[in-house]
Image 1: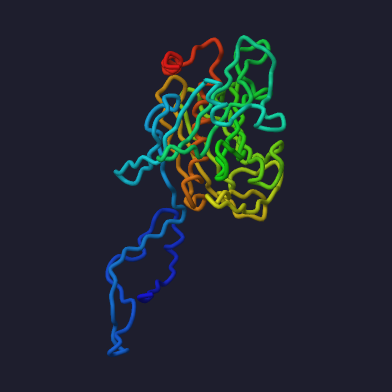
Image 2: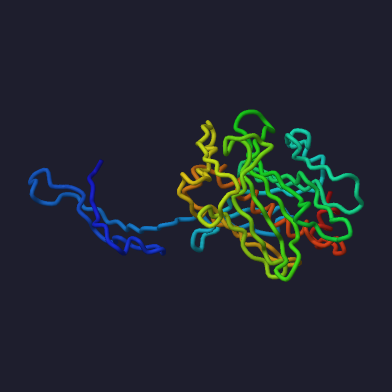
Length: 326
């Protein structure tokens, strides 16, 4: 240790925006020759951020399998790639068979002419290794007598995290349900649950941590903030050890845990070129895999805007390009 220096705590430390505590030279020790005089000095800039966040953006429309970049000021650094498919053979090649997703999660609705099913997006790190995925496990089908997916019969995605041991091994992390909300405030309805080992309960159950409606015309924000949403069941979580990743996300729910912002994803409305921007609280990220699973969740929200289109409308041209390329 070269030395240390201290700062007095002031009322200005409580402001919500970033605050510069110090900028300039500071003494970090005393002279060995004369203990009464200052020794080494360090030029430093110290800024306090009460809620530091990482910012990511999909560098293209989700269904076109874009890169995902991290934004730091004017710098856009590629951090992930993603692969979207509606080809069921891709699921089996990546160990994502419907039968392996566990305990009724496949949500069979019966044979219908109108349904959107089998969608899958896999997040890869820059080495090409899969680190997270969003798999459509319950088809998006219209309610009887309607052309829309309704709240009482939503489509669903399972958000998965790649296991560090064993190829093509996945662990459920969350479940996203989506539907088309009717009425004057209609739009894309989304409900997200934590599932499985993340909260210490079986994969067949879950704890709801957010529910939101996104304007289907203008777009909007999908937000996970435990201080602004009360879960249906009060369950506390314990960290899970992992040799390759924290595996925890420190994403706890329940009255004994201090809540706060977790993540947000901004998406565009129907028919618009959507390149989701994701903000993620730094305290939930200790390694690359932790961020990846939130990218998979953001991608599922964005794709749900298309999956919940009224069935009297066709999917966008980009889905047609995808079909022609497979």
